[in-house]
Structure formats: structure tokens, C-alpha cells
Image (cartoon, rainbow, N blue to C red; front, side):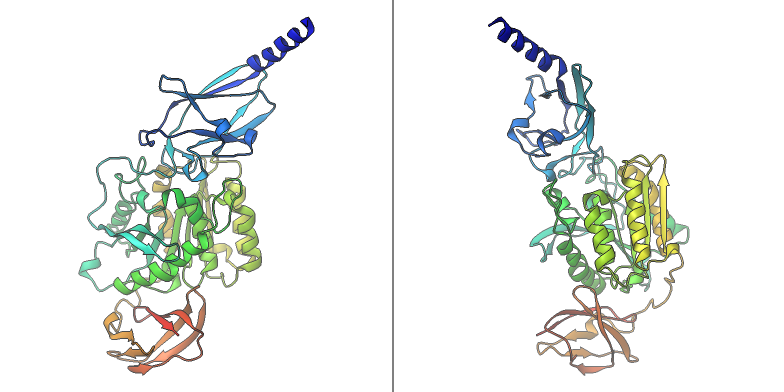
Length: 460
């Protein structure tokens, strides 16, 4: 009996003196009432909603859990029950895994949750410039059967000129222009472009697409990540941008629709989907700004895709920027993806990698890097040509019989026929009159020309 009692005392001693107590002393003010907070990590196969790993309130405004002693160093994160509701950094963006190292003696760690990735908004006054507008609070995304807020920045001379402009399609729209919708500071895309314009820059249109909150990981990766139980809707998301949103923008605003004038820009997961989008749709987008790309989320799938499925990317121009110490894999991952793209035909001179010792995974860092990235992406691109379309959108349309009706042209125009996936099918010459395009399978296509707005057509 004494031996049993002594053994129990020894076991209790090991548990008591080797355990780690994790205590959350502060959570974001916008945390939903009665939210349950979980811990996920190496010790529970990264299950984000395991009831056995629920943080317990201490009755004094803090939450804690005891982790039995182990060996080595483990990783962990806090969630509200799923990976879309995982904790974020001070700006609501990706937070690298936390770590703790077992020491064999008791540890008490006081921690703070800075934000949740699925909840945006700082509650501060609006800082958006006068030339920023909400294009639509609920722009329908048929490929995902949902709606999303779309922001629009127009250059200062948009209403006083006949110029056509390049377009930047940017992810995480709520963080681009306005403190009132960002976490703790916005990119100041509007202020930066307005300043550059005043210094002689040609100007660009910016389309900001809000992320989907809890759907962000799903929509910003074409591939499923089993550890995070998220991802897989990225292809549909890019089809929305290319086949629904871009044609709308090109039809309603004075844009340069050709791929060399259209960019995809994003940070973290937004950078991942931007790189994928240009690889998947090089006939639609040829410029990419990848800020602190979260390639880790789908690194193997992305590289396999680039090496085995990507083609016709010779004209892509890519700008990578990140902090040296954001994570141990950030810089190696960027180099791997860049080298694979070069092996597929991207010119080395058309890639730029900027790694900063001071760089952090934050909006404030990306804000400071945006202007240089934008200028480099469009350096060498002639933006002053084809400024006046020779036919308005009202003069080219498709009738109920499927025929294309054109009037008002001063000359015949060469049109590229582009599939909904962004692939060029054929080139046709059209003049004033009625035309029926032959040789196309049933589906949705786009007629694109340097001299006219683009037109969406349906072949039945």
C-alpha cells in the first residue's frame, strides 16, 4: 500500500512540477459575446475545436489551460472553434504558430490574443480619399454563390480626361483605403497613388475586393489544407475576378483591358491567390504584387501546379516583398516559387525579390512597400497608347439571336475571343454590321480589343 501511495505521489509530483499553464490575459474587444476559445497544436493534432482543449475562464477576466509536460518545442494557436476563426496578428492578418519549449519545470505563460482573422473593423473614423467609392456593398459572386463588398479607386483626372487606365485588382479590400474598416491601419493605397499622380505618375484604377471573413482561407487557396481544414475555393474565386468582376469593370469604366495592363496584388493568403491567378490566367493578368506570401499554406500543390500545369507565362512580371524574419520558411518559399516560374519561361528580369530585415507581417509594412511595387510592376509599360476607344459600349452588343451588332466604328477592329478561363481561342476582324461568330462550343466568351471596351457573349 505504501508503495502504491508513494508511486501516486511521484506521479502527481511529475504532473504538478512539469506542467505548463497557458493564460490568456487579453482578447480583442470585438470578440463575440460568449465565444468559446480553444487551443490547437502539436499535442492534439491541430484540432481547432477539440472540447478537451477549451480555455477555461478563471472568473477574473482571463482564460487558461494546463498542458502536461512533454519534450522539445511544440507549436500552437488559439481559435474560436475552427481555422477560419483563428487568431491573427495586430492587423488581423496571418499570425505564425506560437511555440513553447518544455523545460522539465513548471511554467506560467501570460499571452494576449491580438485579433481574429475573420473579424475586421477598428471602429475609427474613415480615412478614405474623396476619389474612393464603394462600387457595390453586395456584388454577387456567381461562382461562389455569395456576395462581397467591392471598393473602387479612380485616378484624380478620371473625370476630366478621356484616358484609359491600367487596373489593380487587390485582395483584402477592407484593409486598403480606410482605417474604419481595417484592423489597426490601412495600406493607404489611395493616398499613395494620389501622391504619385501629383508627381507625374500616369494613374491607375484600383478594385478592392473584401475578403470573406471566415471564408478567407477557403477562397484564397485553390487547394485544400487538411491541417487547417480549409482551402479549395481559390479557382472559383479567380473565375469570379476574371470572368465576372473584370468584364464589369472593363464595360463600365475606361480601362486598358489587355493583360499587360492588369495586376493582381495581395498580402499573405492574398498574395498566394494573386500568384496562382496570374499563373492560371496569364491571358488576363500579367502583373503580380506578392506581399509576404503565405506559400506555406499550399506550397507543394502550388509548385506542382507551376511545374506541371502552367504554360504561356513568359510575359508575367512579379514583385515579391517580405520580411527576413517573418518566419523561417518565408524567404526559402519565395525563392522556390520564383525559380519554378523562371523554369517555366518567366524572364529573370521580370521578377524582383525584396527582402527587408525590418519587414513584418503587418499592414503598416505593406503600406510602406506598395508604392515601390506598383511603380516597378508598370515600369517599361507604355500606358499612353490607345487612350480613346473608337466605339462606345453602347455601339457593340449581342442580340437575342446570338449575333454581334456593331456600329460607329471608323475602321475594322481586331478582336481576341477569350474563353471564360482566360484562354485565347481565336482572333477575328470585325467591322460595322451584324456578325455571327462560328467555330465556338457552347459557353461564355469575351471579345477583347485594344480599341474598344470588352464584350461578354454567350454561345448556345
